[in-house]
Amino acid sequence: MTRSRTLLALFLSTLCVLVLAGCDLISNEPDNCTGEASLFEDEFDGQKDCGWVTYNRGGATVEIADGAMQISTSQPGQIWWSNPGQDFDDQIITAEARQVDGPDDNAYGLICRYQNEENFYLFLVSGDGYYAIGKYQSGSDEVEYLTADKQFQPSDAINQGNATNRIEAGCIGNELSLAVNGLSLLTVTDPTFVTGDIGVAASTLQPGTSLIEFDNIRVRLP
Image (cartoon, rainbow, N blue to C red; front, side, top):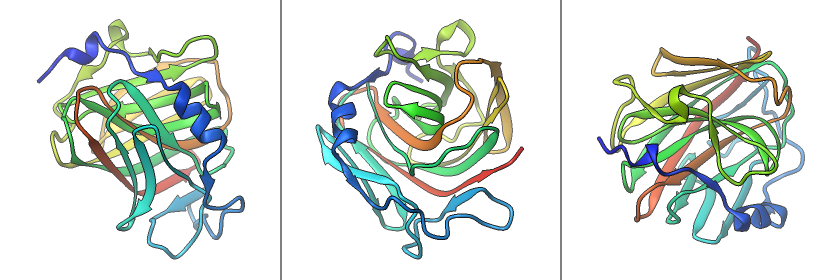
């Protein structure tokens, strides 16, 4: 396992912010994107339009293809993401995330309480078996990790390499929790953001093109 991520932070790309300001919107009005037991759900099967943002700029491509939301990036250390334009307060988000290609030294996962391009929480795993909960906040272009020692931490619960991980992010009151493949990894407290959009995110931390797929996204009440 590489430990380079303990020294290398993820940065907000100014270009990414500009891209999101002028990107292609799939839809402004989600179409049948709720379920009997969910506030929001999307299987990316082409049967509904849930408003996700897609774009192809600056070394990153975000698109819905092959029955999944795909994020591809070749810009080390820069985080790229997509949101469907929702607004939730207390929530539990689940998704299947699969590393398809690229360096194992990466970061991918879920977003909750997204306010804007500079303010949101991140729940991340990596292809070499690490995890973190992080926060972007106005005034800094660098993620603040809320894990021990403010670094990614290792876990055997994470499937490494080109594999699928089931990620669960809880945002309930001031508590933020991360579970992977059914195992709870971390719960922290942070009062900064109380409501906002959800999202998916991915980055590579080494040279090479990283391709991550997300599927079966669900948002439910705690």
